[in-house]
Amino acid sequence: MVPNLRVLNLNYNFLEDARPLEGLTRLKKLTMIGSRLKGTKPLIRILQRMPDVEMLDFRYVGIFCFFFFIKELWERGVGMS
Image (cartoon, rainbow, N blue to C red; front, top):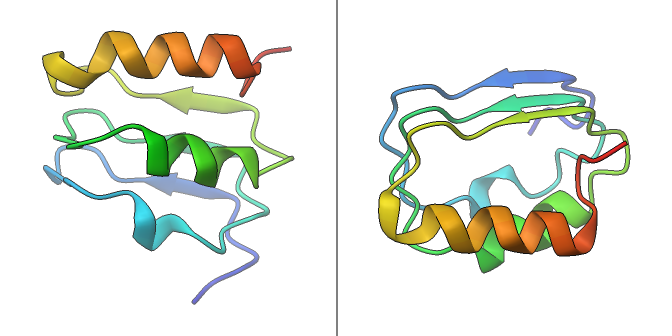
């Protein structure tokens, strides 16, 4: 694993599962444009363990989970200044 990774671009990889991101606690920037996440709860839990995160970009995430994902992030204050 790469625990000191700061920037990760996973755009258009059609990822369905965010759990492999566990352990990237020093990440500052994460982009997953075009992902097809099947659920948002694992991603929310992972993002909560990333205290240094400054920028998240989840454009074009699967429409079924997108609104739930944004709502969860907003309520938990993840990535918000």
